Image (cartoon, rainbow, N blue to C red; front, side, top):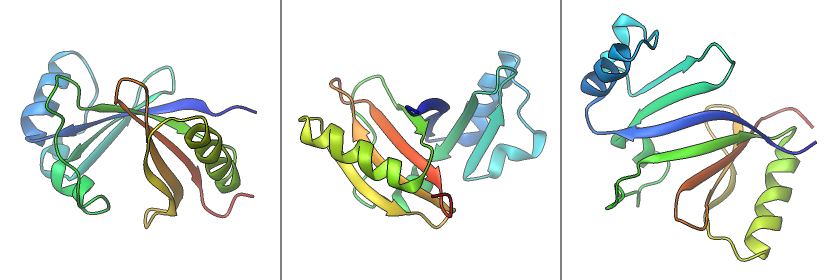
Length: 132
């Protein structure tokens, strides 16, 4: 099975301001989330939308800098297993696509890797740890 789009994540400089904007668009964002470093909701179609502060991203990617262009988003694809994260990482980087962060076992319980699409947008691969 191929990875499927599971989460769209963005990096924010002001969580409260960002969440207020999306609430105005009708998203059901919890009221107490404004001071959280990571906020995630599930949309009615099952797709998840997430926001992370710059500090949260820098906690595992210390060299992260906000993009200079208009985009601050990434697409996150759930894989069937940690081994599939590794396999897709290898296939894509060997095909010449930029690998930003090679696969690692993240402290939040996932095998994780970060690539860039041809336009430089972040594309994350992940799978829950313990699933083989």
